Length: 129
Image 1: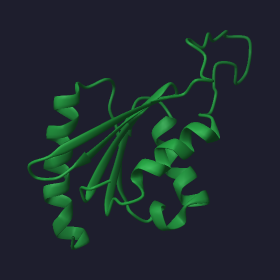
Image 2 (image 1 turned 120 degrees about the horizontal axis):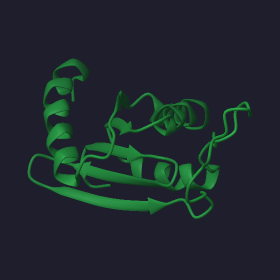
Image 3 (image 1 turned 90 degrees about the horizontal axis):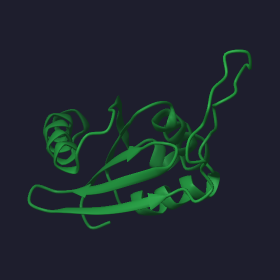
Image 4 (image 1 turned 30 degrees about the horizontal axis):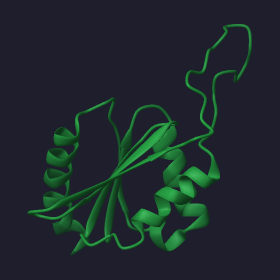
């Protein structure tokens, strides 16, 4: 990662990692090959339809975040908080660099980049980078 900030949009099937600077953006897309195409829920079964991301999938995301000073994690559902928890538990130094976790359905890449730049512009003052 050559830029100082990263935004991860993640769900249970894929992760889009944006390495962001003032004038440049690099994007990497990672797919979870073990994820089911669609999880069906039935009202009479407790916890049916919930599946955590695979550890190998999360490790691939971690590899692309190694050089980031500041990270925000966005996405629908619970995958964003599961990634943040995984970073805190398994990669605590990287977990300390997570500046925010936000809900986001399915924005376009341009919307993710614009929102990330705006977020980092304000957050840099608080984090001193």
